[in-house]
Image 1: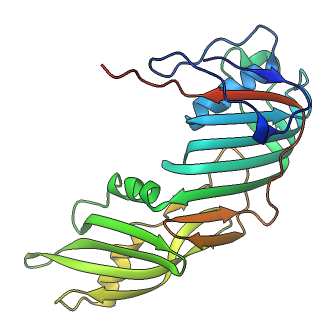
Image 2 (image 1 turned 60 degrees about the horizontal axis):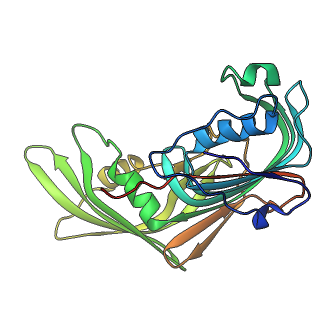
Length: 260
């Protein structure tokens, strides 16, 4: 991996660097370059496909960053792979720079953070397929799609009482924000194929796939405000959108794997 560095250029115009073929790797940044160390930390944290980081000025020795902007493609958040994420953080306080070379990088506090995240239905479906819903009553064959009017999900729910029964449940729903950091299915209507299912069973089934996305342990203290729907994707954002800044720019791109 290689980091490029330029001054006074917008983040969205930062050129993506070329990487050699092979598995992703994180090169040792130039000694004393605190910004490169911070970029390395975020690259490991988010495992992105591509990322641009802009700092209004280099971090000071105490680990303080006055203003930063991240534009990330293919990011992992709370176990969910998302298509894109843009974050701006102001008044960021991290562990001292002297600790960064040891891998001890941590965001201690932040005065303000705003974000704009786009998640596709494919992203969510991959997460749902990997979830463990329990050993007794559980989902399988779950598939979710997103349209401009909301969310449609279907899946088989296995009920074990006197015998085992697979029930096809279809859910028409919308997303809602819970505690400003979680995304849940809400206001859902149900269609059950051929078999009547008591509400308490349905509610239990739906509760096992909640939340769809959890940002409560995200590295930045984000406060989500709005959800916007489009064909095949949903956009989740804070009240104020993150705007690019000018400053010291670093870029990262995951190395491609050469076909054998």
